[in-house]
Image 1 (cartoon, rainbow, N blue to C red):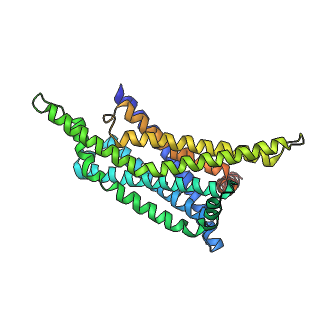
Image 2 (image 1 turned 60 degrees about the vertical axis):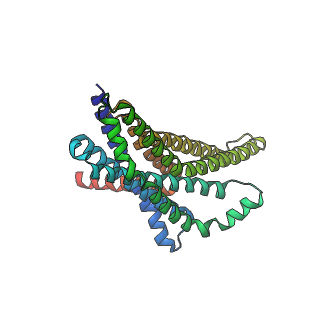
Length: 311
């Protein structure tokens, strides 16, 4: 029963990853086109390019991982292949979390209205050091993912190999030590972007809510488009926060090997980890008219082509 449930969850995760690929490809195409046309890379476009690229690679890698784990299980769990897949998976996840955190910081700095001197200084200089922060984040993700290549296969073996009476206590001690190391490495790699994302999102929601309340107090009784835009922005930021935290929890559980392979718990985590980046990309497209234009143009072109063929 659990094997069937896991297989269904993997199929769902593959579908979610395909949707995420389409969404991130749209974001990447629009952001890249904007950079080429303007000839000056804005901070927002750079963040979106890095974020969409990391998620394109992540979701493609996850789909390949799912196919191999389903149809080539014996080869998949060989040491070299398993370590390579999981280490690259960790690196791409860390990178995606970092870039999403910088996007949240960008929104906070550009939209939130705080009068503190540090905030004003940061707003003035954010564009200049943003490229370096993206590069440093990528390097940090790479460095923090390397230790997983040393321990993750041993942890997998400790969890999946049956225990004998003679070596059970020794194996349990080794397993606990390896799990503790992996959990510490995981927390060290993603704790900082998590803090950045949560703090910047809360500050942004606080600023938008305060501004919305001021507009409500000054309202004349008619529907104010600016007020509706602020409420929509609050909903978007809040959804980003929920998706980010949910993805964070699922990633920690997967990397710490909290569940056995093909167990129901692991299958649910995989579905969540495929759904959250895809959902975040869909919300980004929905909340930005620039990103919504490309799918609309593609659908319009397809409809025109179909009508021409039918005539």
